Image (cartoon, rainbow, N blue to C red):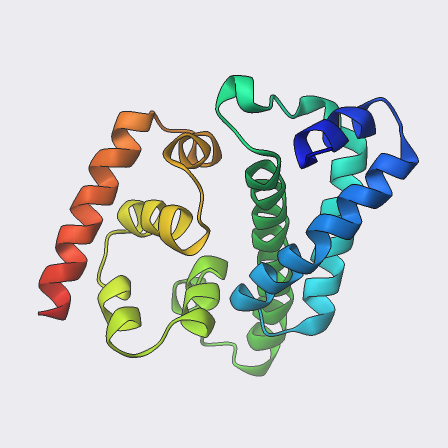
Length: 180
């Protein structure tokens, strides 16, 4: 049985299907999360939160009929949990920094996404990516770094598929120009 079939069974409360889905996907998901976050404890927490969300919301997976894949849906859930974790960690870091340096304003602190990208990419590619407008960087990150389809990226970001394609093209052209 494929992952989509397992998710359908999980939606009906089948624990054995959930265990099999976890066994098949958790190593892959852990590797992908580690590419975005070096904090092993945070990765473990995000994995746990992701699979808890899968257990609770497997019925919301639309499947291939909507153009999605089970692993794409899983990654979308995990990516959102990771961003939430970075935001939470950022709030904690913000309060610690505020106590340590009262003159630092919120504008001086990097966003969770910036922190994530900084820890993931470096060198010419990272520098070129940093020059992109945020909306272009989001699309490129989802398509290239996260490996999502245009349809999955559209759903994740809440924008039309045509807009995803346009932003991806603009981002690639800007990256090419920045790296030449």
